[in-house]
Amino acid sequence: MDRELTQKEILEKDFKTKVRGYDSTEVDEFLDIVIRDYEAFQNEIDKLKSENNRLLDKLDEQAKQMSTQHQNQQQSSSSVTNFDILKRLSNLERHVFGSKLDND
Image 1 (tube, rainbow, N blue to C red):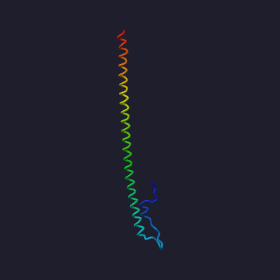
Image 2: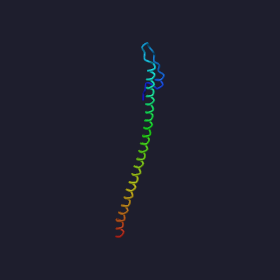
Image 3: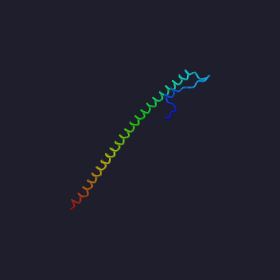
Image 4: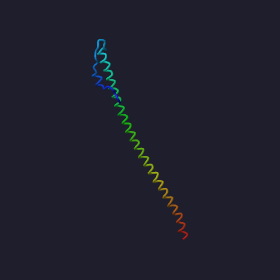
C-alpha cells in the first residue's frame, strides 16, 4: 500500500503561520484525529493480512489433504481393479485349461 505520509510525518508537520492563518490548536487537533485514523487503519490492515495468511495456510493444508485422499482413492481403486482382473483371468484359465486336461 503506497502512502504519501506516515503517522510520524503527520505528527511532526509544522505549518507556517501568516497574518490570517489557521488556528494552530485546531489544526493540531485535526491532525491528531488523522493520526488515530491512520493507526486504526494500519491495525486493521495488519489484522486482515494475518487472517488472510491464516486462511491461505488452511486452504493449502486442505488442498494437500484432498490430494492425498485422491491419490489413496486412485491407488485403492486400481488395486481392486487389478485384483478383479487377476481373479477373472485365473477363473478363465481354470475353465479353459481345466477342460483340456480332462480331454487328454
